[in-house]
Image (cartoon, rainbow over all chains, first blue to last red; front, side, top):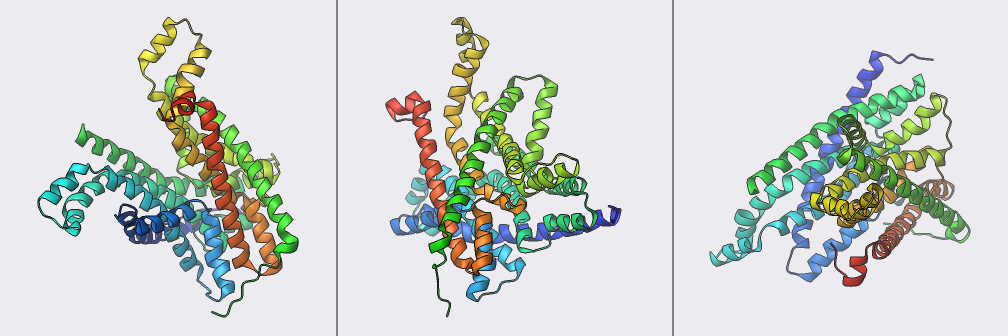
Length: 216
Length: 227
């Protein structure tokens, strides 16, 4: 049996880079899809609101793992064989978009109605209202919960391990298969996740205090 | 696209899906109930406990909330068994989900408990309520009523997260899907069906939680308004 050594730990830390990369892909993709969804949720048109609502309900009502299986094994059988990184990035994007859209919808709605009315009186068109009045204020409110949600994204990238993408969790399994010291290895893996997530949690809490201080 | 959908396997495999869904329900109801108790006790400790106790609960909550559930499940199932404590996949799943649920419940219930004003406690004292009565009727129930929406969505999220226990071969809904798809090579259809079952389960859980809320909170039942 191979002893757990510093090299193994180095291997885990290197695998954590893929966790970070996958998180960034998921966040960027989620933001790109989530923002239009959030705007659709607050649109005047009932059709747009309904469509975005259905998407969010479906994604928030199914496990990410199933979305992942569908996009990796499912699409593979149907004829679109995706690379594990692409399948994982796609699934996490689909997942993150639904949650970010709901978070951001709340933040857009939290901007006082009077801001809409005032910008209307100034003769701004809807695009200008969003760009210069509403979104800058919504971003301020949205920053703490968005940073908080990034923690969820980082944690959920661990699911990419089940389709064979070698990120931190999968690397932990691989090391475990050769050394068979699961308690130590998964504790180390957990600690590395913690090292990535905890600063984000702290930042989110700090930002929250700052946003509220500005209002109080 | 030349792919032809074929759901024929359902004819003889549907009992597997029902059994899997039933185990998912059992696992999650057990861990929601246990996790809620753990979380409520921890939340009380976090608000009213001494400095050491508060710190310990804080470490528990932060550790769980900043690490993936998958790793927690591996630690309980593979980790504990390597230390000599051999648990079955189902028991490991319940333990891991309970520990996870407990941490999130602690944070939610803490917010609720902290929203109870001091004057309420003083009033309870004046009325001669015992400590237990105060905690139960003046602190916990109103606190729970305030955070009930957040609590409900966390419960539904746990039900969805229970799919991860398929990775330690707890034969719940997702594991059943994996099994059936490896027998039939109909992965797209299988996972579609399971996605729909999960959607139905989350609707069911939401309805059940709404109904429980009506039974638990008189104000909601009588006036139809949340606190």
